[in-house]
Image 1 (tube, rainbow over the protein chains, first blue to last red):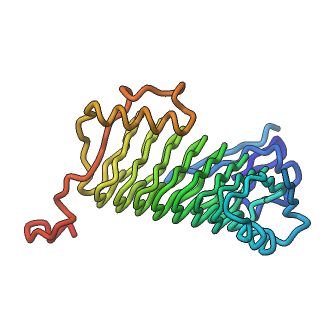
Image 2: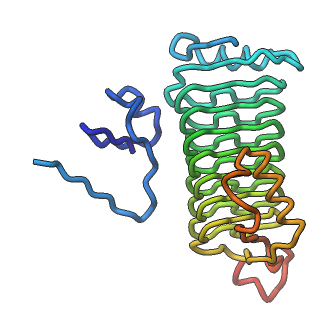
Length: 43
Length: 228
């Protein structure tokens, strides 16, 4: 997963995300199995 | 320091050049812009130090011999798989199967490791500053796995003689893995590994629990046939 203020992206590996804008400063992490994650858009 | 930009130089040529380094080379090499490429600095066999600035993909520093590989970023699956000797250190997180089948050397993970950390480890030492995911040390045969955080489900499933040290909580133990007494020699062992990993300030050996094989499964026993 890659999170920035502008987007949440997911890919099978970092290579798939490496071209995204602002990826250098994104929060990059691996989700836990069997765990749902939710995001919401502020307004 | 030799600086190589992986956006400019083909990875295959960079790795080939690293393989040609003579034994005893001590000119450090810095690789920049890895951008998740696979097998960066894999197959090294020289006492060189390689620093990688950024995230790497699959199998970084796989099959490493002698070299020190420092990754300033995260690592994808199979970090340091089949490591023979030397050391591999990642500042961030490592994905699945870090140190898989490693025969020797040391892997230090500054963040957390995902599932199957140390799967089938055969002598490598792995120190994880954070936590590890499920099925870590699955079928681990030898070596030491030190976890400063927590371990996920089925830690040490079907383990042979590797020694597992966990400071935090273990969600569940795998088949034939049991908690064992932390004797003085084990505290000494943990202290040495923490020191080697540069984490002696962060944890005390007394805080760890030891896990290992109950040795009920790996010799054939007819009463266990349902568990095999």
